[in-house]
Amino acid sequence: MSNRVAIVSMAQVNYSEKRAYSPEELAYRAIQPVLQETGLRFLPAYEKGGIDASLICHEHSRICRPFSAALVIDVAGGNLRSDEKVDQDGAVGVLEAVWQIASGEFETVLVVAIGQDSTAAGAGNAVENKSFDPFFCRPLGLDNVQAAALQAQRYGHKYGIAPEQFAAVAAKNLRNARDNPLALRSGDFSVADVMGSRLLADPITALQTRPLGDGATVMLLANETRARQLTDKPVWIQGLANCCDGYFLGDRDLAEAEVMTMAAHKAYRMAGISDPRKEVDVFEVTDEFAYQELMAYEGLGLCEPGQGARLLESGASARGGRHPVNPSGGALAGCCHTTIGIQRIAEIVAQLRGEAGARQVDGARTGLAQLAAGPAGQFQQVMILGATP
Image (cartoon, rainbow, N blue to C red; front, side, top):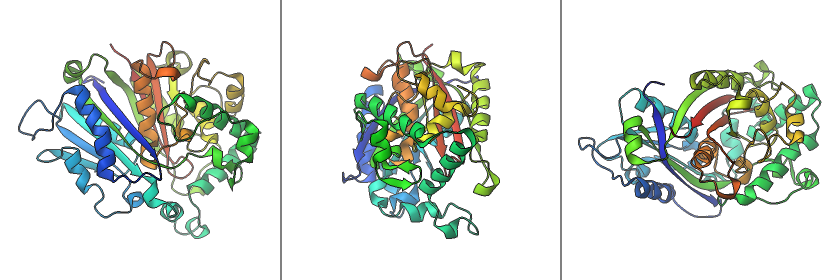
């Protein structure tokens, strides 16, 4: 990428679903530390030296409030300058901000991702059901949990992966989450504990899904000139891509991570990476459901198809392993739906800046953040990030 783009600051807040904050309060709590770190102010577009534009990422259907981003514009300083909405995960907003800066349109863009699972409590099934095709799947009452269960069953059947091996992912990540101050769930859970938790849709149990939460993640992105003015620890966006699979579940082989592989290859090519097993130091992948991490090992090129469980059992994806995956605890540690992907980016930023505390991966210089969204990971996004220089 000729016009280099960096993440120069980021902040996060993460609360259990019982905390009563408005979207504006959530956004403000994450925006304020970014302004303090960079010393920037919100200025009108005709005044130089401030933040040029903002992107507000939220899922309108889940916030359950009309014009739900309208008041967040004020908190994000959107008055008299460019502001856009992304009705998706904040990771998609980061990608959009990269293109806005790389195009030369803006020098700095503030990405604000907010979500409130608490306001959509009890309505998740009805909201998600509308994303399925209206003729075959929607009448069955399918939601994302049930679609994930279908994928886990198909994946396990094709490659001979047992439910206990899915549960082992949750045990690993919840153990990692003990060192994450933002975690909503953590602990030393055995595979038996995970398997024995409440069954949601076979083979997925409650400890194999993310705890719901309310939260916000904010990032400031800048071009190379501004980035070097604003921080001495910029994290550079080296490669990025996304890809979307078919709409109808029946048109897909749910056991395969084809579109993830396509997105990963594009991102690797942009970043100049030929062998991710040797050139990427730390990975943060979507594990909204535990089995997804095993599929990510395969889709991102860490092992061959069907070998994800074996890679996990070898210890390679542990925090001290050859390919540490989700040292933060991943989404299984808890987050709101709109921040699953952007939190993966945020953790990579913390790792590459050496600010991950007890979960720090030694010598991390290059990291990968992956987002899987939609029924059975229909949408995939991969981003490669690198530390200074």
